[in-house]
Image (cartoon, rainbow, N blue to C red; front, side):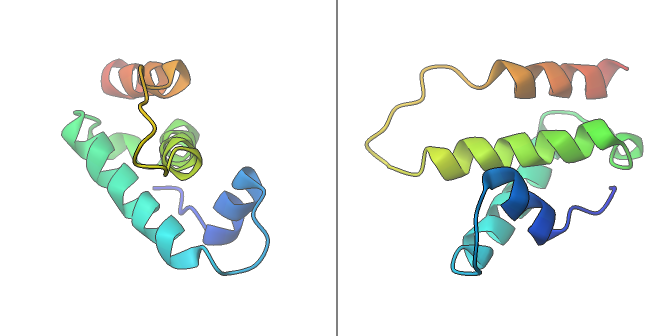
Length: 88
């Protein structure tokens, strides 16, 4: 994968400081697992779209951490990227 640096993700999420670093690292690992289980082939891990998909997954999970909050539909942008990565 175009290596996603934690600083890049924190900039994307507009996070200052290092208090969330452990949580963000967990989100990145979960995103990679999610994309693999969604059928994204390994040869796509070196693309900018894969990196963006990881960042979007992290963003969705960071912004919706409240366990009482129900997410009705997963993000269309992420779904679109996953489809492109699987077929393109």
